Length: 222
Image (cartoon, rainbow, N blue to C red; front, side, top):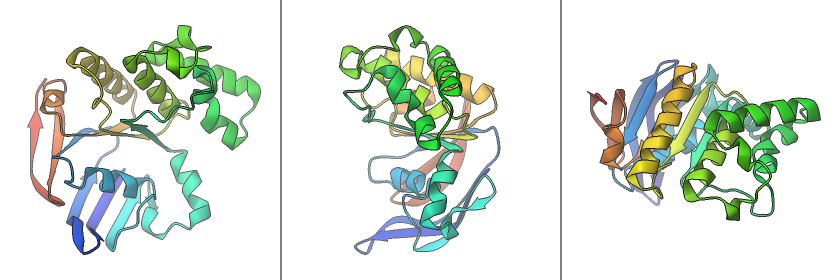
C-alpha cells in the first residue's frame, strides 16, 4: 500500500530524511513516532505529493508519487485522507459544508454528497452538529469533523499528523479509538505523533524516526 525506497530529503543542506526505506501493508495501523523535527511531517507530505524527495522513490496505492505530474496529484489525494493538528476548518462554513468540500471539488451530485457527509458525520459521532460553525464546537468535536472530512471520500489510506497534539488525555483516547474503528473497516492508517501516551492506546506497529533516520522497529500492545 505504501512504499518508500531509499528516500532522502534535505532543506538548506539539513537532512529531513536520510535513506529511508519503509513498507506499510494494506490494512495496517502504523504509529510514526519521533520528536519534533524528526522528519515525520516531511514523510507524510511526500505520501500526498506535497513534497518531492531529493533521492529515492515513493509509492502509494500502486502509484509512483515521485513521478506524478502536478495535474495528477488531486487524483491521488482522493484515495488518501489527511488529518492535521491545526484542523484547517473553514470558519464561515458549517460542519456539513466543511466535510462536503472534497466532494464538491470532485463534482459529486448533491444527493451523493448528502448521503456521504451524513454517513461520515455519523461515523465520528457529530451528526447532530452538522449545521453549526466550527467556532461553536469543542476542540474534540473540531477534530472529529476533520476526521469526517478525511474519510468522506472512502480513502484507502488515512494519514494523521499529530492529530492529538491539542487534546487532553481523555479526548486523545477518543480520537485514537476512532482511528482504530476506521482501520478495522479496512483503511490503512498512519498516525504521526510524538506523544508517548498514544502508544498505550493501540496494539500497533511502531515506526520511529530520529533526525530523519529510521530506527529499529517495535510493536506495542494496548
